[in-house]
Length: 101
Length: 404
Figure 1 (cartoon, rainbow over the protein chains, first blue to last red):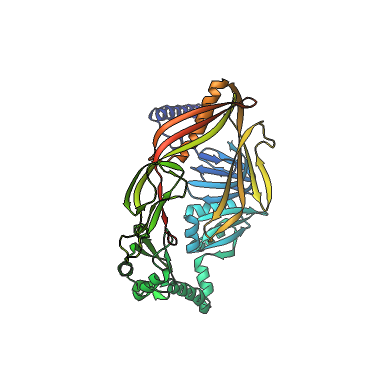
Figure 2 (cartoon, rainbow over the protein chains, first blue to last red):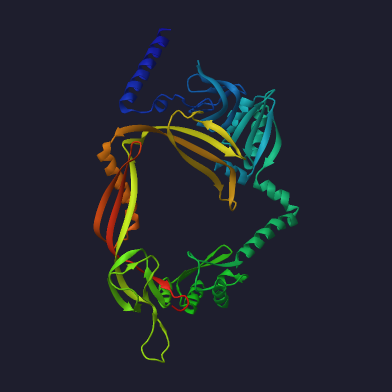
């Protein structure tokens, strides 16, 4: 248990170090910390870079895996316009985008 | 461009159902299979598009994810080609059509002569005939026509032409012609004529260069009166009359008068700068209101109307039967100022002089200028009369008609 806790704090420290270092060098965060980069064009188009595959896909709900947790898009008539290993483009009437986990 | 590429190579619209569609999508990604336009149907079914070349590995993916695939539609050029393979004659039609239009387009079908001004000395048909001799006529192959040779030949055979340009556009050959402009004056000057008075006056000086003088210094002449005759009566008994173009200078005193009135109170209108714009569309005799005030918000105004039509240049002379009417109202503000008798007189004089200035020719010498006040001619109106005396050449040529 103790060891586990220690490990976690170490990890946190590492993350923080990375972040401050990255800020100094102005490195984009999505590259530095492996975060998804999401672009919304109105409520019509949703573009996500750095994704890890699709967890669920229906016409009004799409869940996409990211490095940490997942991104959930809700809306109407959602369509995957294109999908590549580094980028995914959704179209339709987008209602909400939320981060889960 | 990606859409076009997909169409060129051909793609399939597939229906994926059963199993786990999400797993199916992720597996296609891992395998590097292109897939796009995924839309969700009810009951765990998907519609998606894949390139033809990627369909085979997709079946393996389907087996792994427990999905079943069915081809819904085949789209693209390769399929069109397959479709037409069995009906080659059907393809022959468009090919022949293209060939035919290409062939027709390589001929000249119309030859026209155009000029900026109306042709006065050369006939269009004569020009066309010369062009035809050089090989430019309807029905000839475009590449057999030597444009420069045609232009040169036309220039050579018509001395009245100063410039020729030949241009072939599509199936239309146009010959542009510019005529020499010096010619008419020369010709006109050969016509025998008199010199007559352009206006009333008293002759102060007469100088005859050609012709016979009919008036002398000090004569009062009326407008249109003969001054120098172009008909010469030669001395000696037997010789006949001679007709020449009379030339000379006849100077005369000429009087110009003008009356003008001006009000004691000057009412001026000027633009205040405030404007209101009204937009409407006019179509089929009806006007549809678009924007702007429905009532004109000014008491006095000036109207400026601009009408815009839309032309569609794809079709010749096709005009969209609606026009945009932009009406701009400029507010006018009235201002009154009291001029007094002196100011009004000055104003009236200026008005009269401005009117006279238009009548007096450029070469005239001003002798006298007098202003006669007429007093109050109407309530609050001052009248004046301006007289200007000049010395000017009043002779103008007039063609000889009959014998006089």
